[in-house]
Length: 389
Image (cartoon, rainbow, N blue to C red; front, side):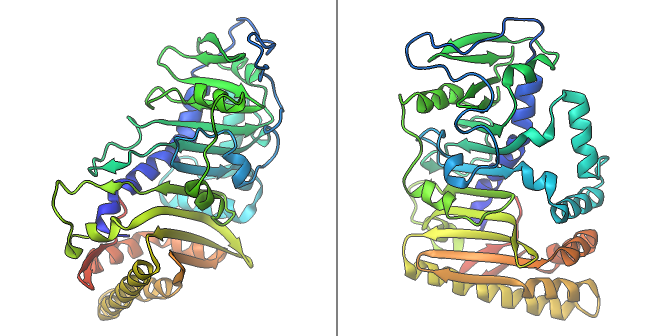
């Protein structure tokens, strides 16, 4: 959106990857191997939480329920609805087109799910939702460190019995008990546990003891996340992927930020949220929301982005004779809507599934036109970029 948001986007991309990689890494790093099966009987009077099903485990969950076990220190969430990816044909078409265009060796969602079941012995139909959560430090220096050294964890809402899933995997693990719940740890440090029917997991690359923190929330020894950040996440459109994050205060090194640096804008953004592939009247869409300090700032942002959109369309128009692809890109840009509701600024794009698939398949030439046409532009004194970093 603006230049100094690049590290936030990097962190969000890392979170998205973590939703899959972190979980698979945690689970594939654990195996029963004939070791003791935990019964889940309480050992300290707090009540056991082991076993499948449970209060929160089965079926697709809403945004509010998804945060019910997330520790209070968290201020970044990324939710994934695996049921939607598994059952909705138009989403499969979009994903298949993206994988094929991106040169992936696995270009069919159903084949990928079948392969996962054959390799790991886990029925995809029993895996419903995941939420990756983390904590962004209150003050940031825009260091591109990603999520590796950041407090983070994940929750998997599933009908799976964790012990049964672990028994089908080849790697050794050790067991420990915390608040009456068994935690399974692999040699590298990744952990998993089943808490109220939900599988909590963490990667060896993530900081903190998030699995224990989830258990503390489940047993009433700690608070779940609440307040504005939870409200922002719960207010996102229902979609296969949805996210929310707090934007830390930028460290200016003691200097006063200027509008020309872009930092003055981002310093006023409190939260960013959004939804990917939401459904609206048969179309699919993307939405990005920025919650800012006051309505005046939201109005300013809207004016600047609208002006940038107009300027970019003019650039595309000038390039049309040399590059016919810019005409299609200009039509896509026309479908990007900018709206404001109080202190919330929203950018959204909607189109039919057929058009989205066509756009993905033509993505190479259009991306080239976008990067070559207007990599960055100055609008209203603020540097606005199209950087996807």
